[in-house]
Length: 477
Image 1 (cartoon, rainbow, N blue to C red):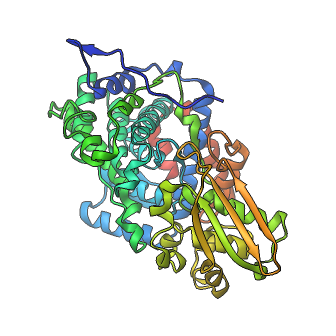
Image 2: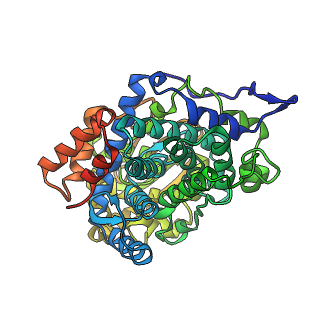
C-alpha cells in the first residue's frame, strides 16, 4: 500500500524564489501523460465513478433533487447536457451543478481522508459535462477525473482539517480549483491559462458549515457550485481573462485568507508533493454508510456490538463515543441538536443519532434516515444516553477513528474500536462491495437490467469513443 504524500520543498524556482504553486499544478494537470497513470489507479477511478453515479441515481428520487431541478431549469431553461437519472437536458454548467447536488445530496459519496474532501462529487460533474460537450474519448474524461482528484486531495491536505475548524467546507472551496484544472485539461488549455484559471477560482470557491446548526440543505449544492465555478474559471482563462498568480501562497491567497492563524506555511509543500508518483486516488474512501464520514467508525463499532456481543438495546444504560477532537464541531455539537436531529440531513451529522440508530436496529442505511426512524422513541431515548469524549489514540485525518463503550444495566462494559475507518485507503471496500453498493442504490430508481448496463458502461469508460454517449446513457428516460 502506498504511503500518503509528505511535504517536500519544490524545485521550481524563478529568479531564486519559489514559482507559484498554481504553475506546478497547471503543468501536472495540463500535460501529464495518460499512459503514465498506473492501471490500478484507472481501475479504482472507474469504481469511484460507478459509486458516485449509483448515489446520484438513488438521489434522483428525493424531494431535494426535484426542487433543485425545478429551480435550476427555471433560471436557465433547457440545454443539451444530461442530468444523471433525470429526464432533463440543461445548459452545461447547470447540468454540472445539478449532477453535483445529486452525487452529494445523500452524503453517501466518497471522501479523501487526508484532504477531508469529497472530490468526486465536484470533479465528476465537471468532466462529464465538458467531455460530453467536446465529444471527448472516454479515456480523456477518465484521465481528467484522475488528475482533478489528485489536485483536490493535495490542496485539501495542506489545511490538515483546519477548514472545518473555522467553518468552511473544503469540498466546495477546494473543489473549484480542482474543477478548473480538470475542465481546462479537457478544453486543451495551456499551462499559463491553467494557472490563470486557478487564480480566478480563488474568487469563486465557497462553502459554509453553518448548515450544521439546523440541518439546512446548503451543503448539498457545494460540489456542484464548485464544478460551475471551475468550468467558468477555465472558460475565462481560455479567453485570456487574467487570474491571480499566487492563488494559494499569496498574502490573500486561499490558505492565508481562509485559515489565518490555523495555517502553517510549511505545509504548502503538500500541494505538489508526489505529483505523478504517489496516487491519492487510491486513498479515496468509499462510504459504507449514508452519513458524514466522521461518524462511520463509531457507527461500525455500534453495529459490531449488536452483532458480535449480542447487545440488547434495552439493556443499554449509557454510551460513550470516542471521536477525534477535530470532528467535534461537525458531528457532536450542539449536543441538544445532535440528540434530536431536525431532519435526515441533520441526522447524518450526528454521532448521537447514528450510534443510537445502529444500536437499536443493528444497521445504518437510508431507511434509518426516513421519518419513522427519526421519530422512533426508542432511538431517541438511546440518543439521550450517548455522550462523547476525545479519542486519545486518534490518527485523524489519516484515519477517521472511533470507539463505542457501552455500559449495560446489568453491569457489563462492552467496547469496540475501529482504528481505521472501513472504506479508508488502508482498508478499502472491495470492487465487489462497490458494485453491490452501486446496484443497491441504482435499483431504487431503475431496473436491475439497466443498472447492469450502466455498470458495464462505466467500468469500460476508457474504451468508450464518445463521452456524449456516456452522458446520455446516464440521463433519465
